[in-house]
Each structure stands twice: as C-alpha cells, then as structure tokens.
Image 1: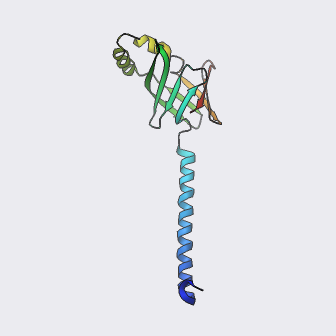
Image 2: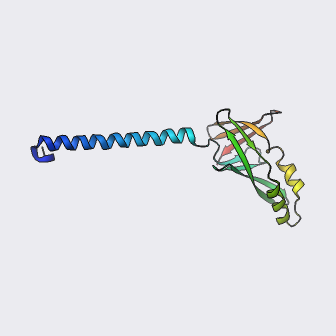
Image 3: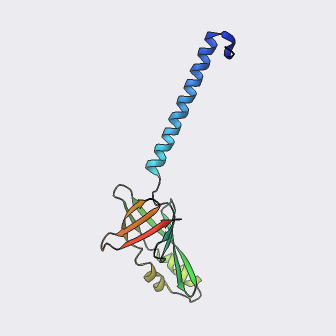
Length: 153
C-alpha cells in the first residue's frame, strides 16, 4: 500500500508502465540475441594451428591474418589475405593477394621472396568446408580433402 498511497488509478498506471518497459526490454534482448546468432561470423577470432604450420586471425570484414611461423630463420610472417564465407553451405574461400606478398617480400630484405610466400601459403589459399565445434575449427579442402585443424585461442 506504500506505492501510490492507496490510489488504485495511480497503481494501475504504474503497473502498465512497468509492464510496457519490461516487455520492450525483453523484445530488445531477444532481437539482440537472434541477431548475434544468425549474423555473426562463426570463424571470427584467433585460431592456433594444431600442427604449428599456421595461425589465423579471422576478422569480420573479410580479412584473415595468416601467421606463418619460421618462414625464414626464426622469423614469422603475418600475411593479410581476403576471404569470403558462405554460412549456408559452410564454406570459406581464402584468396591470394599478390600485392601484399610483394610488399612483404620487399620489406623482408631478402630473407624470403614472393614465391617463398606463395609456396608457404599454397595449402591455405583455397576453398574449404569448415566445421566449428567446441573451440576447434576444422578446414577440409574441397578438392582433395586435406584437413587443417585449429584450436581457438
């Protein structure tokens, strides 16, 4: 009886306002959750190669940063590559960026060449079927079936 001092009309009005605010809040939270579930990139994040050949940083804007550990004497290289994802068919295609490879080769002062980078990236620059389960990313090459496994960092 403390609320609205025994005035039934005021209590009714407060109840309606409370009900409308809570309903609006529930709807906003539901929309947010559904948006996150169906529009986020399932591959986004940092992935460490199980075999140690590659590490991936998948970003949301169609960019993946591939880290090749020890391409030259105790030197790792981060290569920025474009990718496209088809969530419906669960496929991802990582593409080669010649300009980026040329830029990195020039910057390396002769430690590695564009061809060395192309050869090192050859297994990762292709189309894959992907599967993400329990912080484990599995990429299966679509043509030959070779498999790369990554663990989320």
